[in-house]
Image (cartoon, rainbow, N blue to C red; front, side, top):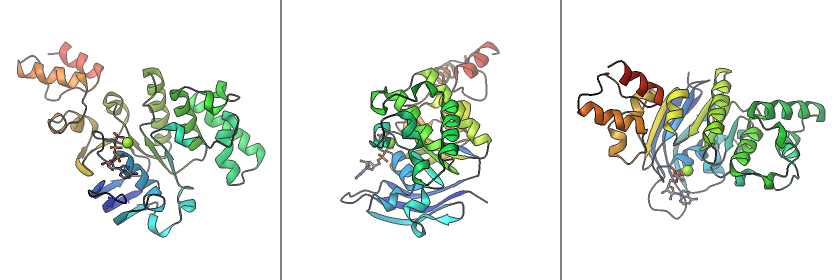
Length: 280
Ligand SMILES: Nc1ncnc2c1ncn2[C@@H]1O[C@H](COP(=O)(O)OP(=O)(O)OP(=O)(O)O)[C@@H](O)[C@H]1O
Ligand SMILES: [Mg+2]
């Protein structure tokens, strides 16, 4: 049985004409890592909000269809109940900072404090989560003194410390360098291996190809395509519809036209490209 089920979800923000999500049907298995790609305005963030209960509990507007996580429907739960199971890291990490805490450590502890976790356990869990994302050295810094990439790590950590069953990440590496990006994808992969279900909106297709189980391609609020990462990320439909694609895919597609790429698949990552050109 699916852990997450969206059935025919259509959603329109207040005072807008066009729906941001249109007839979205989606199932995600427990422990699956699903990446969501799409051009600007495709509805990636809106899908994240829908999974996290912010649509319809925070953003009003018109919604139809149903959103179910772990056997519960979002419109039959309050947002307070919902966020115990589902954690969302916002696209802009600045929006995540509570503004109530002076240090990164206290910031990460904030959620646990709110649900009344005892001090000793809280400390242990915060330290564990900080080691996971590699930010122990930021513990005493002010959340406002951090770089964008550091803020994103803190935001991710403050979600992970809550141990949500469903982790929803909206472009969590947008302000990170390649090293940070690889680390975050690695952590997310590890969480999925341990049974956490992950939905991540992300543009970085080479990392998606390496780490995700499945890719959903969204365009104008609709699912244009879904499937295994290599299959979706090398589809001709992507460039035709304004999606960003891997440079290695573009090069191999050109090479194929000239008879220089002999494999029956196109590459997404550098390793796949190197392997394919070497053994032709
Ligand atoms: N708060 C809002 N009120 C009204 N319309 C909104 C709101 N937020 C987003 N929209 C609209 O909903 C549609 C989907 O936006 P969304 O932010 O989900 O796209 P996205 O794929 O996350 O884009 P990006 O890549 O820029 O982050 C867009 O047409 C956008 O203008
Ligand atoms: Mg977005």
